Length: 346
Ligand code: FAD
Ligand code: NAP
Image 1 (cartoon, protein in one colour):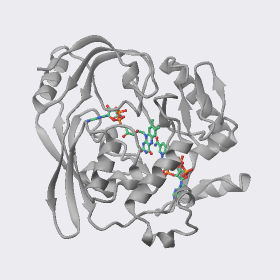
Image 2 (image 1 turned 180 degrees about the horizontal axis):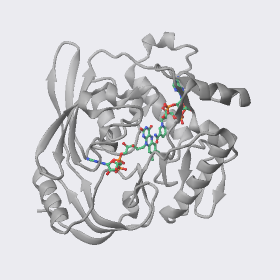
Image 3 (image 1 turned 45 degrees about the vertical axis):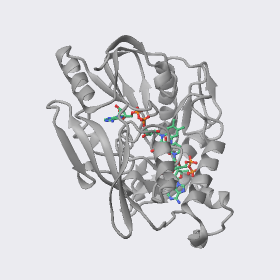
């Protein structure tokens, strides 16, 4: 039976270590407890926050509702053919441990996504991505519970509307489903992805064409090493990873920007638009290493806002607002937050 805890402190359940409380908290470990929690929220007219690892949220204030901590566990191989393996993982599985588990089973394709914090169930929400691989490349389908009806539903990969750090779960299906498991289609024979210069450098390769001898385990080890060097460990320096999305702008807007900043870091997209490295914009605007009270901009990567003082979410958001304004003034580019803000609808 689910246990509903009132006035629950969420500080250790969000990686920014923001001290905020929820009106109610419940940890759910099976389907019946999810339904029980949905009924509790409906009966008490409480808003609902499904919580995984708390690594992509900002608690702007106390949460006036029910936090449903997703603790569903289990990993199973559900099918295979000569070249592929289908693996289903429950939503509460730790993402990084799941990736390592797949590697150990000889199932490949997720290695570039090593060491991303959080849970399997949250990964589809923003279609997590790193080093040239996105979740969407590997999702076969996912299972969810409709929050209003309590019915179980299946989303095919196509119906998830995956896009760059985006999915239907941020738009038309926002706040409507509890994701309960995700099924991945993985490869038996590895095809490693080594497009990112930092990975090539870590593996001491000069060209991605030389990648044939590199194993997925080596890729995972390289990803882990690069990330540990560059990104703050939330357990030591609270943070939510990249605080802003990389903006995608039109080719025309990019040409104008490049006339003013010849060294702007940018990547052309297949549709003709251009992805700007938000970290470069923020760094070049002078924010890298900036500290103000409890909060700071990470010295190794300006895209990461940290909360070393473990202070209120409003401080974190106030610094993010200053950065956004300065980037808009200097480059005419509007940054958008990557983490979701609760309880407000930013
Ligand atoms: P939470 O923060 O708990 O939740 C995020 C959102 O998903 C919330 O809106 C929540 O309500 C919803 N949600 C969670 N679980 C469910 C569920 N089962 N059903 C329905 N809704 C749910 N992201 C990347 O894409 N690439 C990276 O390389 C990356 N690196 C990071 C590095 C660091 C150091 C940190 C701190 C974060 C990084 N992130 C990265 C962001 C974050 O780890 C991912 O977005 C991750 O998927 C969030 O998982 P979570 O379980 O912590 O989600
Ligand atoms: P990086 O390798 O220094 O690259 C800087 C930026 O340039 C990244 O944002 C990346 O875009 C882009 N980039 C680099 N090489 C590219 C290529 N060959 N093709 C297209 N785009 C390229 O970045 P980093 O900060 O060290 O992060 C490494 C990876 O981990 C990135 O993929 C990043 O997204 C991911 N990461 C994400 C978070 C998060 O919270 N979302 C946090 C930490 C790291 P992309 O971001 O689109 O890949």
